[in-house]
Length: 187
Image 1 (cartoon, rainbow, N blue to C red):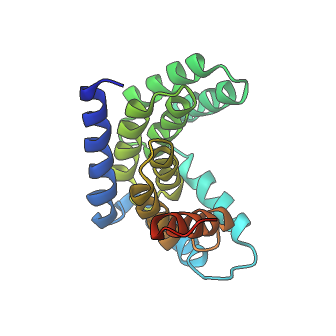
Image 2 (tube, rainbow, N blue to C red):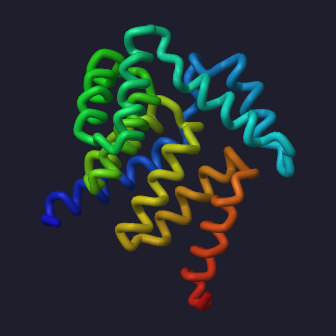
């Protein structure tokens, strides 16, 4: 990885972790999503998977059937492992709906799966700017940090995601694992 690429990765990551966590939720997320997030924040919530799925469904609504179709096609291309097609669909989506956080989050996933961490992190930063409560983007950011050998930053991203989504067991496990790693305790 070139020095410039490494610098950009770190810069985008620092922005995403430091700046976006302090932003208020956009007005577009009010109402139904506020209620769902209030439910999701309840530690020990038995039906957290249902609430999480409802949040994802709300996040997937752009307000335009054409844009929703591009998101669907991008996701279908990822499921079919056609990552180039996924990026094409999702780039068309982000070009035409630049305020739709889920378009950036989905494209970040496609970039990540292609091994393109820099573009993935840029899209995560944009998704978090548009939707600071996007626990999926935060989890993706943590995953990328781990793969880049930055466990401290990964831990910070996972903790931010867990503050929003305390019932996700994979987050709890990742946080415990990284806390042990960073404290010098072997697993």
